[in-house]
Picture 1 (cartoon, helix red, strand yellow):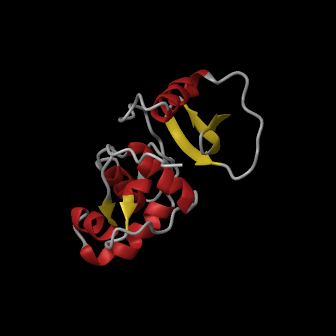
Picture 2 (picture 1 turned 90 degrees about the horizontal axis):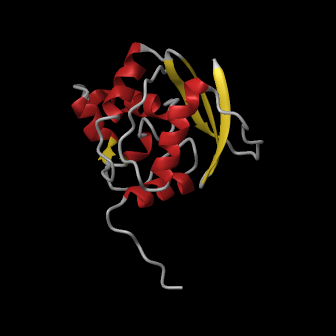
Length: 157
């Protein structure tokens, strides 16, 4: 597995993958040294993440290889159907997966998503519209949702 670290508007991001695909993208809560030479297997991922943060990319086209249980992989695949700029509740996600009673399991799988941003777990919110748990921190979830919003909030001051 190859690894690199890049900077993003939300902090340093670690990417792990190989010829089988990207296995992990995580936001780090510490300052790290950026990778000087990006491994060939990760170049496309780095480029697409940079385009996303620049507002030039709404859909990722990467070979993914997350490691999880069959249920987790099913949830992560379903997360990828949530369109850019849209949100969905955990309840709606559970319904789409065919089991409304699995809402806690769905939320748990969502929280274990190893592919930050590319598998858009940040687009899942509470049924009341609240920003609920997010492994990267609610401030990052809010930033991502605002970044993807078609209605850009202008600051008055």
